[in-house]
Image (cartoon, rainbow, N blue to C red; front, side, top):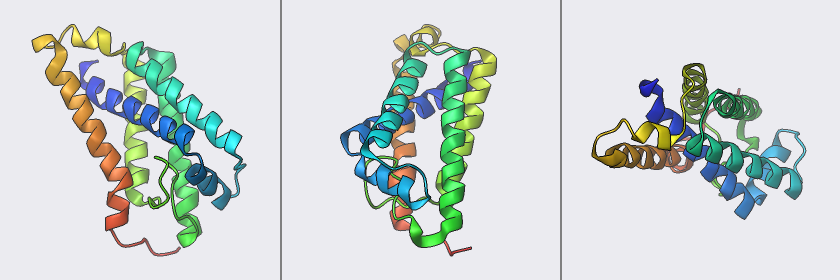
Length: 173
């Protein structure tokens, strides 16, 4: 159970942050959805963002198998989107993840989405609770654990939002 805790909370926090970004700035998500032929209105982007905020937040606070399965399903959906976007080639300028226009979907997105889905699935099978349940078993009042989750979330955010702007575009298929 404990082995899935930190990565699961990183995935959950990242999900909530991405949802918040879509609520604050839905246009990149709208463009990403439109580019792969999915419904792409402001309302659709904001509903997706609201769902991400709710699922990610509940996973962090309450945890439990049902919400962990929702986190896993979210990341599998993102992975599917990335596969479609990568097959389209250069047509998708942004994945729309974090409300920015310059983060094209890459293989890094696909791998991290699949890892997050696997981690959430493991947390669901283990019946992992929320952060309040987990930090009770941690040293130093759970502060190092929470710090690790925050740092891991930051690194995952950078891998999804900054790294794609630094690596060359993937060739069209």
